[in-house]
Length: 181
Image 1 (tube, rainbow, N blue to C red):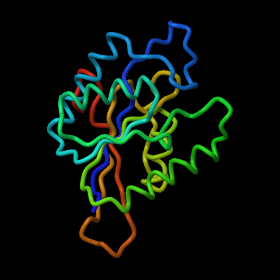
Image 2: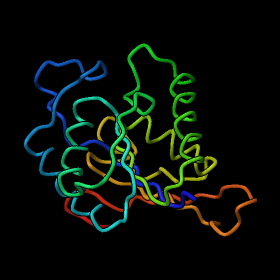
Image 3: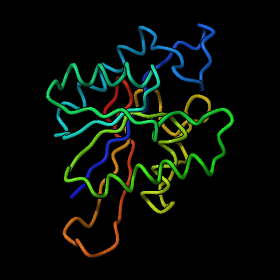
């Protein structure tokens, strides 16, 4: 039964390169971003992940590569369900695909997974999993994101022994590059 989800925002992308940000493949990571991703990978190495999911955007893929380098036996699945919020995509469509992704996780046999994604999808996952109870005040980073680049939210099921009861999740930001919180 899934009890731990680590929501990982991609590391710092090159916004100055002229590559459209919200269109595939999007910008690649900067050197700073690669270092942030290595730090996140080192942090995740101690978290007993059983599977890693990633957005197919270049910045998420390159963040995932750093994690996979540190955890070479960790299976990785790339899925557009957790991709960046598209420029012309409605918020309702974003919610629908995020809910579809999370519904698929409920059937998984894993206990702990990592999800490398983007600000808007991570915010929607946090809100959906916690039933809107997550406190995002004080967690507003660049361009309004709920996590800093390479930041990690830990979403933990608080009632894992109640298999028949409702899923109850709590979320906490636990990592920023250079800081374990």
